[in-house]
Image (tube, rainbow over all chains, first blue to last red; front, side):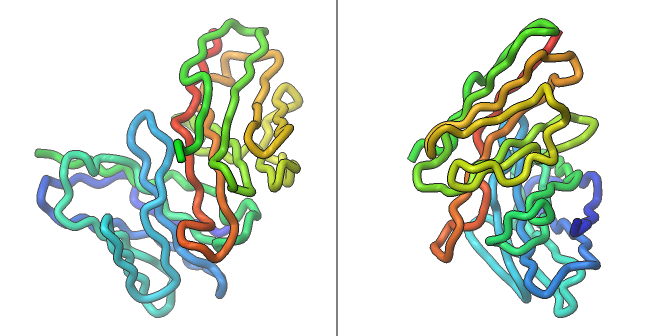
Length: 113
Length: 117
């Protein structure tokens, strides 16, 4: 299974930019990096997906260096409502092997006022 | 679309009883997944279906667990008999495979919180 490593937890304050890094040293050529967000008492929700360089949507940005062995999810100007667990997954998007469907421990982000 | 619909949202039962969790995937999605989440083990993939056919059930903990998908709009996860260690939140997710926008990502339901006393 593609193994990902993320910090267990992070703390931030409202209005700050938060960067969560995911390490995936054994990423394969066809793998994409996908991030999900999970609020308490809810199922995970897709945030962003990318293959290389930078991807931006209305929620976040995803930075992927040239070697693709890590990726950084960037949340601009966080608010209290961004308090959640963030998961990084690595795999081929259309693949349905367990490798692409395995959630790690995630990063618990706590935003303080 | 109303998203992935799960029922019941909460279930409390006694050890030994049968539990049936239900899921209605998003219309048109070709894959359906059952996950279980606990504090100790995180999110575990139990089983998934493609076009109503079970593809991989290697995550099903033991024979007490079974899952079916009789048609494209309905799936069940059954535990018989239930045990206290089965207490967890069970999530159903569905996915559309393809090139279109929004494809190839999991859409989760709100989950079914099971407590076995």
